[in-house]
Amino acid sequence: MNNSKLLFLLISVLHTLTVQAQEAKNAAGLIFGANYSDVNYGTEFLEQYLPKSDYLIFSASGDAHYGYDIGANFTQTISNKFSASLGVIYTALEYKIDGSVSDLKPEFTRPPSSTIPVSVDGVMKYTFLNIQLGLNYSFNQTPNQGLFLTATFNSMFHLNTNWYLNVINEDLSEDVDKAITGIDQPEYNTLWFVGLGVGYHFSLGENLSLTPFLGMKYGLNPLVDGTLEPTITNLEVSINKWF
Image (cartoon, rainbow, N blue to C red; front, side):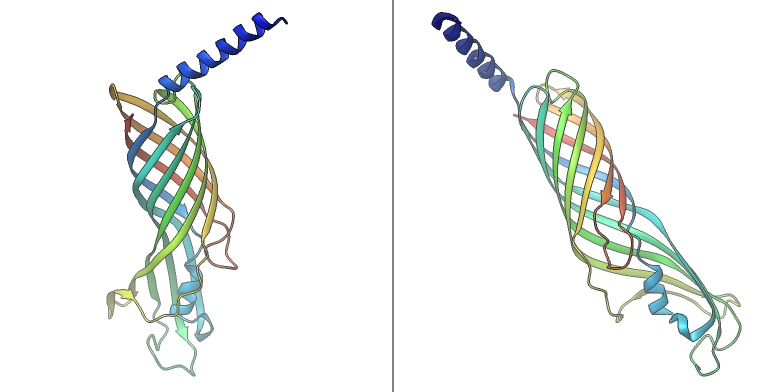
């Protein structure tokens, strides 16, 4: 390749990069969404609230439940196909718990003191500061339009935990709604996730888009030592201003 052809090639590449840089757009937006999570903790708490060793009959279970997300994100365009995003999100995860006990052992005198079953149901509510990094691939020629895929990495820092339980004696002698306090909280871990998702940018004008997004996050560690890694399904909508 002679010098003139090499010079022409370099000029062409620089021109292409310049055009792409001029066309590239960044965005800032707000995120609103719902989640469905299994943080895999609650049964252990129920055994602490109603000590398992005190009863002849004890059963408990925990299930995934619904929560919500609200936050802000910033998107930086890398090329006409790729962009990177940073989200700072307030995330609330919830965990449904159910249990029943009966037949308090003779050496204990506190209620229930007979064979009457007591059922317990409620929700454990956790809140987190969720820092989300994303790498986005657009199926369109620009990253701010149409269908895209996202790979995410999340760090979720525990902020607070609340327990809300409904305790009902089966003979209706007691029906108590209560927020549980005064019980030692375990040492909660910062949660780490990797995830995949798909979204679509709907244009609302020249520089505004509405973006629904569906994603799955897979936990790399448990919230409480000795339990399983959580999973989260997210359905989010963001409003993005491109500039």
